[in-house]
Amino acid sequence: WPSELFEVETPTAPIQMSPYDARQIDTMLKAARSSAAERDPDWSALLPGSYPTNLLTVNGRTALALALAEIAPGKDDEILVVTTTGSPYISGCVTREIEKLCHWARKPSPATRAVLVIHEFGYPAALPAGLDPKLPVIEDCAWAFGVDRPDLQVGARGDFVIYSLPKALPMPFGGLLRAKRPLARAGNAPLLSDAALRMVRAGVQLHGAEIAAAVRARL
Image (cartoon, rainbow, N blue to C red; front, side, top):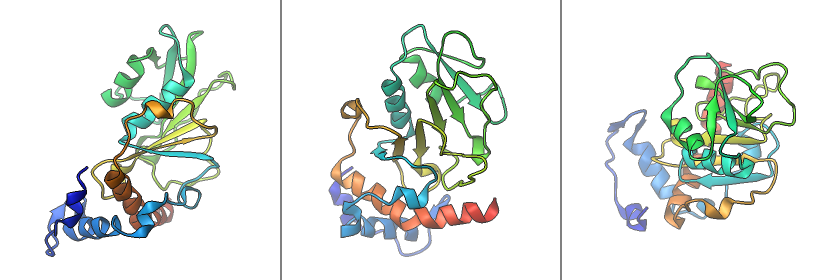
C-alpha cells in the first residue's frame, strides 16, 4: 500500500462508497498519519474473550490460513465446518484455504482434526454434541465484529478467532487472528506494509468502538 496515498486529498462532498462515504475514508487516511496509528488497538476493549495474541493480517483468509497452519493437520485429516444455519453453502474463501492442507467435512468423523465454527451474520453457531473437547476450535467471526454475548460466547470460546475487518469497518483490507497462545508460524504470513498497517490500525481505532456499541445495542 503506497505511502503516497496518504497525501491524496479525497473529495469533501459525501460521495457514497457503500456502506461508507468519502468523508469517513478521508478521516481514516488522516488518522493513519497520526501517532495513534503506531500502536495496535486495545482489542480487549473492542472484542470479547481473553486472547494474548492478536495479529493483524492482510485479510480474513490469511488469518484462517495461519490458524490452520498452527493446527497443522495431516493431508488425510478433516476440518469439521459448522455453520449457524447448516446451509450446504460455504464460501470458497474458506474451503480453498482448508483444501491446501487437508479435507473439510460437515459431519464429525474419526478423521476430524479441528472444528471451524462460522457465525453467520453474527448469529451464533453451536458445536455438535459429543465432540472431543480436546479438538482445537477456530471461530470465524468475519460477520460478527462487535458481537459480545457472554451467554453465547461468540468470539470467546475458540482456540483461534478470525475477523475480516472490511466487513465491519471502512477499510479496503485487513484481517485479525486472535489466539490463546503464541503463534509458531506467524513469520510465514504475508506482511502488511507499514503504511497499510497504520491504515488498518487507524480504521479500527476510529470506528471499532462505534460499530461494537451499535451491534450491542441491537442484540
